[in-house]
Image 1: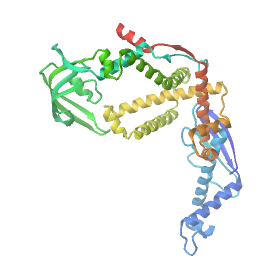
Image 2: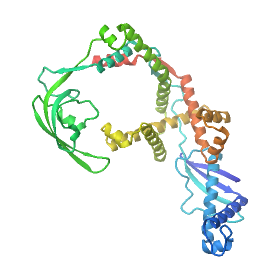
Image 3: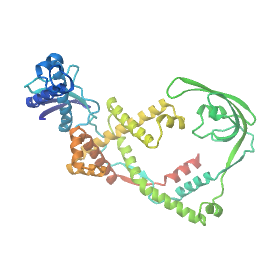
Image 4: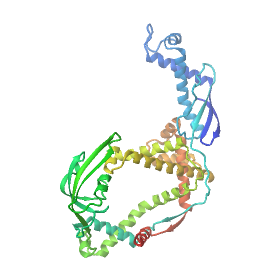
Amino acid sequence: MDITVTAERPDNDKVVATITVCAADVDKAIAAAYKDIARKYNFQGFRKGRAPRPVIDSLVGRANVLAQATEDVMNDAQPMMLEQLDIVPVDRPDYGEHPVAVVEHEDFTTTATVLVPPACELDSYDAPAINMPPAEATEAEVDQQLEQLQSYRATYEDEDEDRPVAADDVIVCDIENKQGVPELAGEGRQLALNGSYLPSDFVAGVIGMKRDETKEISWTKAVDGESDHDFAVSVTLRGIKRSVLPAIDEEFAKGTGFDSVEALRDAVREEIEEDKKRSLPSLKEDRLVEEIGRHLTLEKVPEAYQNQVFSELAQEFLGQLQRQGMSLDMYLAARQIKSEDFLADLREQAGERARQSLALDALATKLALEATEEDVRAEFERAGVDDVDKSIAEFTQSGQMPAVRESIRRTKAVNWLVENATVTEVDEVAEKRAQKDAE
C-alpha cells in the first residue's frame, strides 16, 4: 500500500495526522471486500465466491461493502502512519464521530487525532549525583546478616513483667471464633502481632490487653471487592513472650556449618559481595532514573498517558503473579491488603514511572540520542527471536517499531546517566543503625 502522511502537533500530547491512500490501493481494497463477502455468504443461484457485485450490492448493500473496505484500508494504513511519524500512541487513534468512507477510483484521505506522550523539558540536564553502597561488604552489612541468622534461631520465653501487649509482641492466647474467622480459633495459640497474616483490626484490638483479660473484638471488611462482611472473636490473653537470641559465638558458628565466628563472617561477607555484583548495577540505574525524574518540569502527567503506564504496570505485576502460580486475590489476602489500597498504590507508582519515562525522553532529545538500524537489530537479537528479519518486518507491519525505538532511546539515556553520574559511596546500613541508636 502506498500512503502519504502529513502531521501537525496542536497540543503537546496530541498529533493530528492527515493520511492519503492512492486510488489504486483503494480499488484493490474494494475488490478484496467484494471477494471476501462473496466467499463468506451464500447467494442463491451463484456458487460460493462467484456472486457478482450488483447482487452483493442489492443484498448486502454497497455502503456496507465500502465500510468493510474502509476498515481494511485503515487497518493497513494506521501502522504505516505510526511508522512514518515514528510516534507511540497512548490510545487508539480517533478518526472522528463520522469517519470518511472510501470511494472507488478516488484517493482516500482521512484525519486521525493521536494522543502521544508529551514532549517535556528538564530543569537541569546535568548528570545527577547519587549515593550508592560500596561494592565491598561493610562490617555493618555483615552484622545485619548475622542478626538475621540469629532471628531464625530465636527462642521465646515468658515475659516476667505484667504489662500491656505492645504492637510487635509475640503473645499466647485462646481465641474463640464468633463470626467468620475459624482459622484464628484455638487454645494456646502463639501469634506474632507483626505478622502480615493477622487482620489489622484484630491486632489493634489485642494491643493494650493484659494477662488473663478476655476481650470481644469485631470488625467489618470488604471481601474480594464485594460487600462488607462482619467478623468477631473472643480473645483471652494467656501471656506475652519475649524473643531470646543466641549469642554469636563458636557454638553458633558451628551450628551454621563453620568452625569459627570469623569463618562465618567471611562466608557472609563473600555472599554479600556476590549479591552486590548482581544487584548494584540495577540499583544504580534505578536511583539515577528516580533522580532525573525529579527534574521534569511538567506539572501534571496527562491522564491518558498515566492510564497507559498504569495498564503496563498492572500487566507486569499480574504476569509475575501468574509465573508464581498465584492469583491477585490470593496475593491480596496473604498480605492483608485491600484492593482499593493496592490500586491506589499502583496508580501512584504509575505516576512516578510516567514522569521518569518522560524525563528520559527529554534527556534523549537533548543529547540527540537515536535508535539506529543496528540498534534495532541488536535489540531483537538480545530478545532471542528465531528470525530477526522476520520479527522486524512483523513489528513494522503492526506499527510497533516506534515503541521499540522509544525503548532504545530511553536505554541509551540511562546508559549516559550511568556513565556520567557522580557517585558517592555510603555505608547506608551503618548510617541507619546510627540513626536508630540516636532515636
